Length: 511
Image 1 (tube, one colour):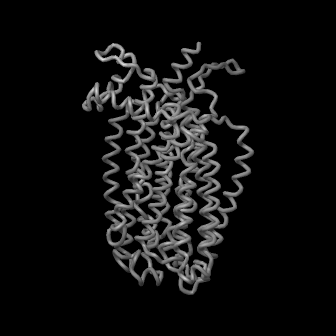
Image 2 (cartoon, rainbow, N blue to C red):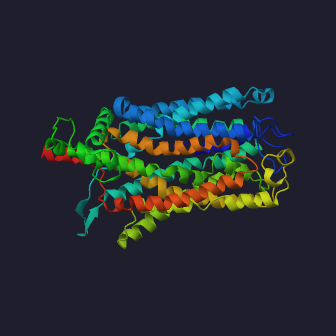
Image 3 (cartoon, rainbow, N blue to C red):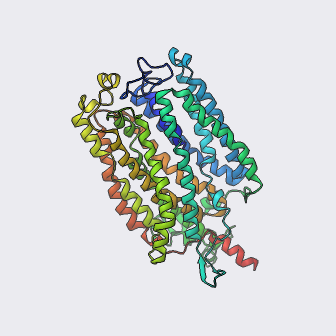
């Protein structure tokens, strides 16, 4: 996943200049409670372009690294080297924050190099959630009698849900490290804010070595991508492109169907593998709806950060508001894990992955638009509150508390619980065994698409257009939520299994 604690520091470091009267390390002068920390002073467009391209790389590179893990290296090796590269990137960040470089104006090049090096490192490990699900001993529903004599069913879907909720909780505990570092940034400077995560990354290396012998590590098994391409070719040739929207599109590539056709051929796959491919494409279709949710969750480009600079902080760093995203996730996941989801199962209410994702999409549409409208309306610089010199340099802001930003960030965190957590299980359960890394990477790539859109619209993510920048995605998100529900609601009725159809066939033949 994306290094959340780093992103919140990048925005101010690039966008804002060194504060007048500050300590030369990026921190404002003592007593300047409404001033924002800064360093490079490259402006909104450059800040948005660099941070959006960084996020895009973090979520696009896993497609390459996921394929490499499936075919060549295995997942653990890529996780290891990803952490090493991230640690090296942070060492370079600390160096680029030195006061001499900041004062001379020569810090931009080393900082940008460190940012994109960090993206490569994060791209190596961010798609490897399948490693976690590989540890699960129960992959299909199993009946069990407890010591008390009670008969229960061990449900892999409920287990996956609980495991991935804890996984997402831990990710966001890491994201909360940005809380102390944003205050360090504001009151001491950037070098110390970058040094702390450097130490944490270095500490991960001995931990990974300790865990290596205690994990179930599946070796690289070669990619099934070539077979998938052949299956698609047969489906288009024998079934026709018009069948792509029907449930029997992939049937034409099943060996049992090919054998009874007028042109039988030998193929190196089974009917079960074709079902796996069908499920994988269903999952990919689901992921295509994610970019608009992510835009509504985080704002298009750096629009949310620019909005926060227009509000009255009273000594609170503007980018600390981003932590409410992680905070609501940390507080809500135990409630979901031990309260809401067990209660729903007890009442036999099916709240499957599609229903959860639809709920998340709906929550994501409730965002930033009204806050930005009133910030423009009441601010001393009107529709140029985040860019006009008298507001930026003089610390002039709208008479609206920065704490209002906690609301859209908190709603975004709640949305992520309902969208991202079931997406991990979908990516694992609905893909061929040797493509799980790749399909998980495609899940992440949907985020890259949202950041590509952010890059495309960098030129309008600025004053005086921010209200439209928030409002248009809100409307699009509401429409796409309805379309998504009607397209995929039937998937919640299918039985969930962590064993693919082809793996089930292999087990049957082995009996």
